[in-house]
Length: 402
Image (tube, rainbow, N blue to C red; front, side):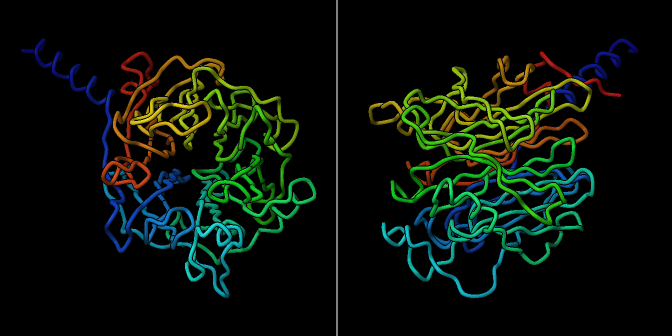
């Protein structure tokens, strides 16, 4: 009897230590919105989950009428608050001329886009950035764990400082989440475009903006990845702080090799290394995310994106879009030099994703799942998966739990 109980206890312990759980947080066609896209997630200093996204009133795409919505969970994702619109700019609204020139938008539509949050570990605040019409950028702050946010403050002037070097007509933060460096610096990847190419998002370059005074002011970084024949249209980018304090950017491009592009900087703003493609990080041309897990003194870098280069019903051409499916999370134990673990969490249609971790060692992946009909750009739902490292690595890695 004692032996049987011991075996049962051991089995229960193993089950607890290898777990995943998923739930749909936003379902397209509900709440007055045709689509929900561009997911982001952070864990606050108090352990609250904040999941946010673009709520699209039509399926016109990136330039249609869009709100930014947010939900909160204080119990690790078991229950959630109702969705709430959190970004609203008072005053006159004007569409971006480059979108109108390409007939991508209606003049009367108001587009809020590219939400990015940063959970401040030092002050407990939540910093939140977003854009309007891809030509104005705003910052707002929450001091009550994401329950409310202050009035948006325009920070477009930070982006204007890029103009002598790159005369942009389109700006975008993130998307996904920004990071706080160990020294306290707040850092957000950004991309800029002249808006003359396809979808008024091309050509483009990648950089960062940062704040050293808890969000009161923002500065521009150096252009990390320019647009070249080799590095084609660098745009949506994820950032992470490596174990030695360097900042890594993991960049989406439309380059012919269909691989992710990596570059590092000592401070996240200047001195970027020569960008290098990583052979093991496939690029179907879709946003991907990074997060770190180091709750037990062991450094783990996580990366998520659709791990696929197939194209249904067509020829897979170099530098062109591939199917957004087979969403996988990869793990590196040596600061992105090698990726020893890969786990598929959604083999079907899956697009943008964002990663977060908490102090208990839970890993969260918030992603675009499914398609409406056969169109994987019209996301059926935004889904959250909570997992532990034991489940993610099939037991090859485990946390040192007290």
